[in-house]
Length: 155
Image 1 (cartoon, rainbow, N blue to C red):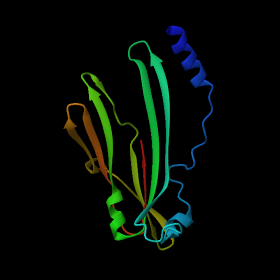
Image 2 (image 1 turned 120 degrees about the horizontal axis):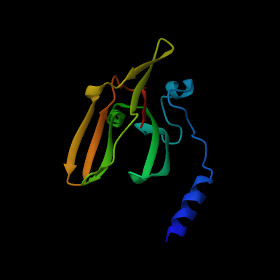
Image 3 (image 1 turned 90 degrees about the horizontal axis):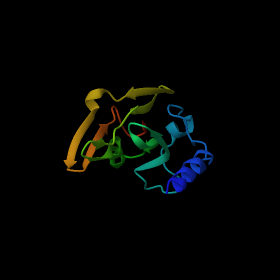
């Protein structure tokens, strides 16, 4: 059994993934100017990118740990699309073992006078909610979201 675990650890450490398709905070002007999604003109919002990467590490005190990094970018196209500005992250917990959110960034980008203006989510926009005995949610409401905004979440 130990040999199998060792093999899996070594094989995963040499595997190659794809490069992230976007960089947080680097919003192309064409995304800001978009008013309609070409492939579905009735869309209220469009997910421009939703990229995640998982890694597994091991240490003596904690054992195996799974780390997941995610970045999500969404363009709000209509008033109905404003609901995308409320984002929930489910977190599993069991006894003393809890999933945690770290390095959370949530930003709204608006085009004002030809320039991209950022509005960052503050601490009061982030709510932790207990759902049941094994599930909690971290909820974020992005600030200053309106039709035409691009929103971005990373954790």
